[in-house]
Amino acid sequence: MATDTDPIEAVFEVVASVAPEIRAGLPGRRTTLDSENVTGDTQLAADVWADELLSDRLSEIEGIGEYASEERETVADVGDGYAVALDPLDGSSNLRSNNPMGTVVGIYDGSLPTSGQDLVAAGFVLYGPITTMVIAREGQPEGYVIEDGTRQSTGPVTLPTDPTVYGFGGRVPEWSDAFGAYVSEVQDELKLRYGGAMIADVSQVLTYGGIFGYPALASRPNGKLRLLFESAPIAYVVEQAGGASTDGEQSLLDIEATALHQRTPTFVGNESYIARLEEAL
Ligand code: AHG
Ligand code: MN
Ligand code: MN
Ligand code: MN
Image (cartoon, rainbow, N blue to C red; front, top):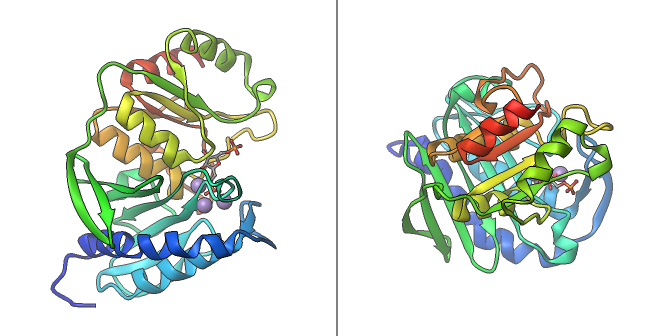
């Protein structure tokens, strides 16, 4: 990898350039492996394959020192520089039903595990009817359409001031009473949009305004989403787009991870809905 490139830019170039390869590789990799990842997810062949592909390409970048992903138990030391934390395929259970999925990337200036305060950039690719990407780095996030592995800018990404959609994960009987009461208010105000892939649901919030979340559940007191690979990177994007994030008490970026695969209740979206949620919980 050329040494004069900016490693952060190089990471997003790689993630964009492999997007067509990942899309093309999905049809043949819908099988469920009999392996589980460290957070107990059943792994699809596509999960493991996308992780290998991205790890190989990203580890070559000069200035990237650590590679970690949802699919790997430990952090791989790949040299000196930034730490890259990936969810190689977010929403991979949507592969069977052919619903949208994504790739989430966080770039941390600090050894993992750390906190979202160490994020210097974050972004995601959404494999939907078309392939889109959002990159947040030092301020205003930017949107892209990916064609043949190259990014075409579609301009700045700013959360709309009038919220329209909401989506919350988990089974309703497993929600806390306080959260259930909050959702009863929200459902009278916004339209339900929940598709089972965080990235696709967050893309709807970034496009139409509103709130997405995966709350603490009776069976999962820390919720389902992983702080370093999903929640913090997406909080970074949404906060830089003018929104807010919370685990119910604080910005997701302020949570100090003590474990690489730590989960957290996760909510991102318009500030008014985030503030009301923190009041309600
Ligand atoms: P992943 O496929 O990377 O494991 O992530 C799945 C996550 C997230 O994308 C989504 O918001 C959530 O799981 C959906 O969970 P439910 O299937 O419980 O709704
Ligand atoms: Mn998974
Ligand atoms: Mn995920
Ligand atoms: Mn995943």
